[in-house]
Length: 73
Image 1 (cartoon, rainbow, N blue to C red):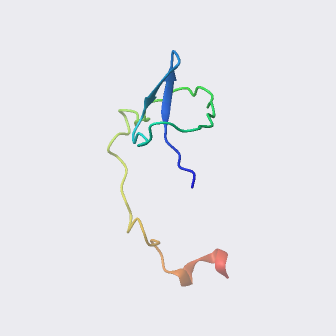
Image 2 (cartoon, helix red, strand yellow):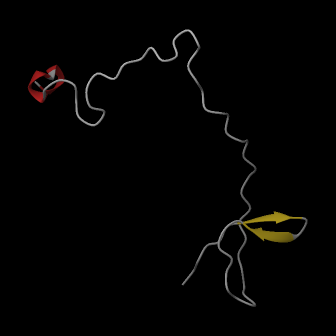
């Protein structure tokens, strides 16, 4: 059975990100992932409109009854 472990390769040394395999010796296949740019910080609302939004109804169910959905007719 194959298992995957995440590691970072720096200067020829592997640093395990989370779980480290419990083996003394093993044959491995290494896949190099391209460097990714760090995610940009989460966007926030402009100060002029921050806090002005309102939630109309439940976030899980629709605000109007299904019978009133024009697209379903």
